[in-house]
Amino acid sequence: MQHHELDVRYARLADAPAISAITAEYARQGIMLERTDDNIVENIRNFFVAEYNGEVIGCCAIAFYTLKLAEIRSLAVFNRYKKKGIGRLLVEKAESVLREEGVSEVFVLTLSDEFFRRIGYREIQKEYFPQKIWRDCTHCPKLMACDETAMMKKL
Image (cartoon, rainbow, N blue to C red; front, side, top):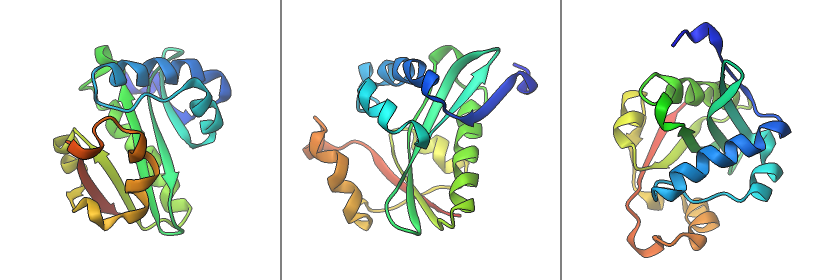
């Protein structure tokens, strides 16, 4: 895969169906909460996409919690494009935007802790983030048996 054919950019409204398809693939595997099309459209300005030869093949989103704390979420790459460094490029793009905004701490809730460890995240206690727990997790089928690892990075 030639990285010059790969563009990591802010999502546009027209990317919403592709983002929906990618995240749905992960939701079906129980790796991610399903995001409705409406939810993706509402939050489109917080998404980034990786586009390869005109096709959107990966995405991630940012969510702001305080002036200094944000989350990277909904990181997903179509299966056939995995293990090619696309997830890392998406995270790096999100981190650079968060830095520009003055955010100093970013966190993730993930099943891919090895991936995030390689790019500088370290494990933390979930209790570290009271706001988070309670914004999304209330809708999660795994609420009482969460298998995700909370990790953070100082920007």
